[in-house]
Image (cartoon, rainbow, N blue to C red):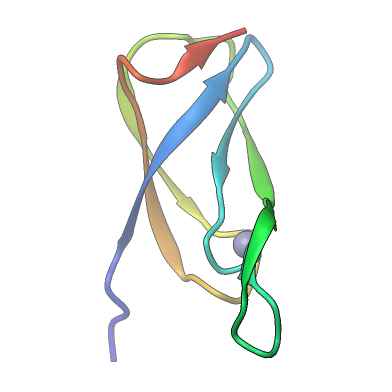
Length: 80
Ligand SMILES: [Zn+2]
């Protein structure tokens, strides 16, 4: 069975890598279901190959939460 491709927006990019917030690894609530005041945010990094332009990158996720992902580098992505 083919897994649905998950779409992500890169939050930051520089000459070496870009990163996106992983909703599978981040923790927004405690085990008892209570929402965290300060969520534990986990980002994953992928190589940018030196390009800062807007584009879509297809990658395999770094964690088991997601399979194939599309990472959008767009106008909201911060150039570092
Ligand atoms: Zn993850």
